[in-house]
Image (tube, rainbow, N blue to C red):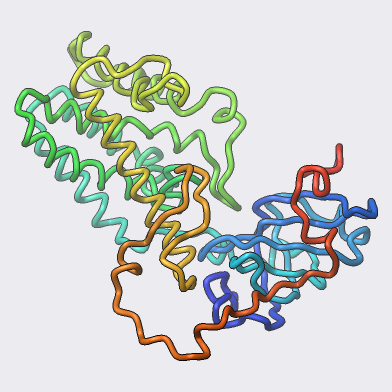
Length: 361
């Protein structure tokens, strides 16, 4: 088992560490001199860390690829208020050296309890056709195992083992409450849409080494896969109403809500509109929570820019927390620690740190 995890950076700042990581992304970029340097994103189950290797890069350029596992020695420091790793040495790990549970983040919740909560919601359905349909999915051993383990997304939200189930149970709870406020909404239809809306992720994403897309997922996307899965299970439910089938198909293909976000259709009936907005809300709330967790070590209540939400975020709990009185020496700005070998090496401008054609992995 690893002794250093990315969440330990705050305790190892300005220290040399040796640890193992999965390569989330790999880029080979040029310095101003034209010589290459490595820009990596490394990951383990506690998070991700940007890493740079400046020296002796030619020796390791082709020694590993994205999704490989590395043993790395380097310096943990801060640059622009974010932890980074300056790599001194690295080598690719052999398969026998890898403990996969060290590298993929996993829900902290009890998966058995989440699954039972989902089953309880389904058992409460008044519509026998919808109840039988969802139970047909849940009783399929292959689907059930994947549903309990799959992430809900690659990076944006619930991107951890068990994330899909966590997201769906959270949505069931929220939608169940909201449906009580709108009696015209068919609760069973909404909750069936919740169960189905991301089920294709079990085939769209791969999560054995790191989170990435399968070839089928990349070519078709989870909504097309979901329609195929729905058609297969509907064949097992006798006399399923064709009108209800059409509504379920619309729930699946409209849940992203807007054409530019990948929806072939906009939500056109109340249950579809409710599903879209609740799904969007749950995703964004989780994205905020995860961002706060990643930057919990920062003193400022403001986070860095969140690309998926398009803004920096204010951690309101940290902002409202009581603060110790400032001492005189605290009033002086602290020097930012960064390893800056020269200007060319810390530049990230498009002109000075563009990817070398043909060398990006």
